[in-house]
Image (tube, rainbow over all chains, first blue to last red; front, side, top):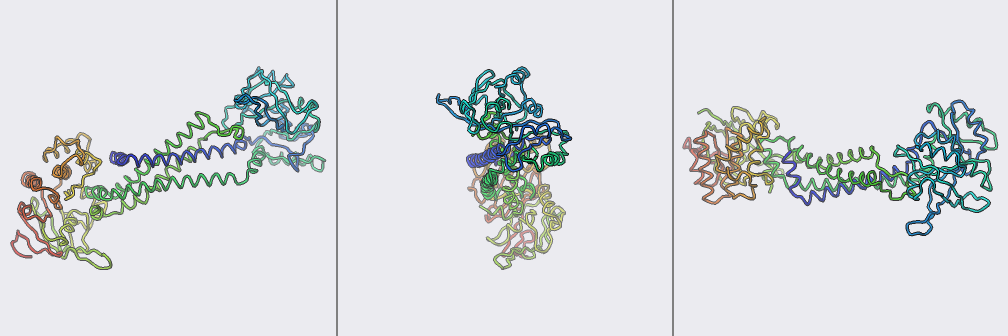
Length: 389
Length: 232
């Protein structure tokens, strides 16, 4: 072990540069994984016991609000809440004092039915009571509230790009509540407000909703329940298509096309580069020490001693790089909470499974990059090694 | 004295560039325990090959090499490594110390293969360094020592394992006359006072004269053995 550590720092600059190379590559890998995680945030926050009922043809068509009572009559359904995508832009001043229109997800909701379906959403009791009493009230996620510098009691004005009201494009809300969530995958950049307030004010589409979010008693029976709901509305003017919340959210991610494949390809290229950097260093280190391997063998060290010495050195370099790289990524994404595009990524964090993948990649890099020199060193005859200069 | 080494028709053939090179040709000899032997001959005569066979670093193409009662040809590479650490120690012309380790750590290195406590290892290392007269340089790295001192550390490393057989491949080849004499005096003491069997490969007649017995090799054949005073 002592020899391994001493060999590691024999050429400190080379070791430092290799460790730095591996750590930069691993940081990039972790960061890309965090971006992919952000893309899939909606999918990950979905619960298996929640279904989404939408128009059979397209999300752009509405369903009658009256469907709610019919959906609730379906066996196995416990709650159902109509929701409409609002598509508004905030009208708050930016850091420079000028008006800054910022986009974030907003939904007009049947809040009384919606909130019980989402135990992930935490709202203080007094705020919830105020929200339910105030028709113009809204609840904002803690992250978007922080970003827009809003607190309970403030006013919020949105300019809607879809829904107009007789008095114009601007919609005013009272920030009655701010929700948080213990789940790192739950989007805390959304805003919900009362459907009734919205429906009374809009000048078209009255009485319609975009989707019904529906909870069921037994997640394993989702196909049966979905099929019962859809068959109930078959041959009606508004036929439905019921899918799981996960599948619904996934359909948005798939709209990004092969972006995920592209990002995974970049991640793979980064990992391969890391492997080559590490392998090159180990090759050089082993070649320089051919004679020393002969010395070790001549004084009684076995071939496997030499093999593990070189593998150990390679693993140590990769692990050091891994600790610095993954550690920096955790620091940036999870501790400091840096989000490169807060209006695009509702959630930006490094999940534990990415860290596990990073650890496995680093271990594999250490093993693979050390394998060739270690096998060469192991096979080397002491007499040949001692002759080398 | 009983024989510590017995070679029976030992032959070593290397295959190089499609040709067979016979570096040792049916060499037979016996060396007694406690002997001090100088192995001489021109370059390419097979001296180092013979030394490597005796130290278990190489195996004969045919014939038998028995050292300390063990037929080395019958051992696997792993068993040979263990056997080497128990019975034989090498001293090289180029000292062959590990540059990252201090004199103390270099001497301690082969001892880490044995089931010894740290205190026991320390005792062995300090004794070996005291014998070679380097107790005051134990924390120096090889690049902080002179050539003669480096060679003495190499001898201490060899001694630390308390081997029965010391194999030295031109141990004074890179040293000035004064340092060379010191090393030969040290080897003589180890042979005389500590009973080590020593085999030294050398070109230097002065070094060879220090030994009690001289063997001359030529083109892989054992030509002269001064013990028998006849050409073989």
